[in-house]
Length: 285
Image (cartoon, rainbow, N blue to C red; front, side):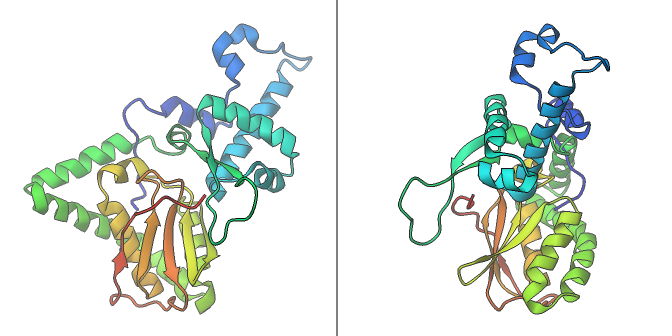
């Protein structure tokens, strides 16, 4: 999708600055009681314990952003922390509305016992990441639609813009895909997308693979203009040389943008294939 990212006016701006300065996740008690509740500064003139907690909490948030909905055990393993420590941070993040617990999606036969609980970023949590220009982009696309005459002509103009905007990005993706072995092309595409800020991964799925984008810099704009998602899916189809199907999108309310790639269908074919842009169903956690 388009690189420039945009956010509704006044929403998520302060949190965005804090995230980029490694202080996005503040302690709830501090927010409720004010500066007086902040632990006293130590000999060095700072509150190292509180700073350390915030830093760790930011790492937890970033881990969920990069890898998608995760269990406490998975986050603990990635960050080399104890599960008890991670659960404490997750409890605080849930209370702040940054993450939310969900039931893990299970494919195939369900095993006995309660399904594992995973934690996913909320819309509020996603707002903290590089979405300071959503309103501007949405206004620009709306203007394009109106200038083209509105209605079907306006929608076609937005679709044309989305395809043209992706053309430059797609060239870099094409080089990465063509340089990879056939079985590694989905993974190569995922790495190229990650370099553009989409935190993408590729994983095996029944009769194929799933390309998962754990972050979408333009999710809020795509909610209003699905042509952005459709153009992206078309690009994936052309790059991989096969019909692909969108199973879920962040813009549609899912935790991750998920694209299904059928097995044996990763031969680049620049123009000949089509894509399904269905977002039916929820995203696997």
